[in-house]
Length: 93
Image (cartoon, rainbow, N blue to C red; front, side, top):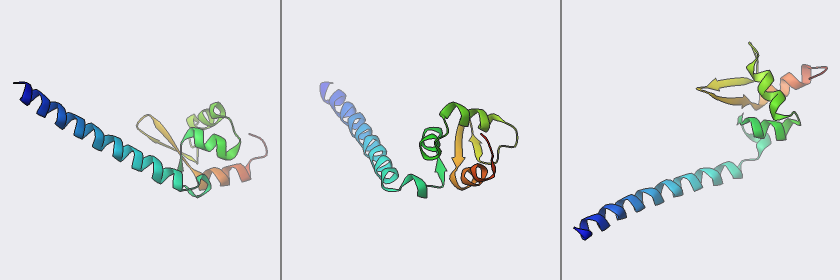
């Protein structure tokens, strides 16, 4: 019985290890691509990139017809090039 438990926990450990490796690879690949070359940005990345605060970016993203924000489920994605164009056209944000 202990052998079966050990085997099951080993499979769980291997599966968890595989998930961690996949997550690490994703983080590394994101870190290799400079933020100014990424197509999509998180709110935090967009704030660091643009100098606009996270709260203000969320406020702008919630407005109807926001040209640079795309909602996928309940998560906001910022299209970097559209954000650049939006900033260029604005007198005041």
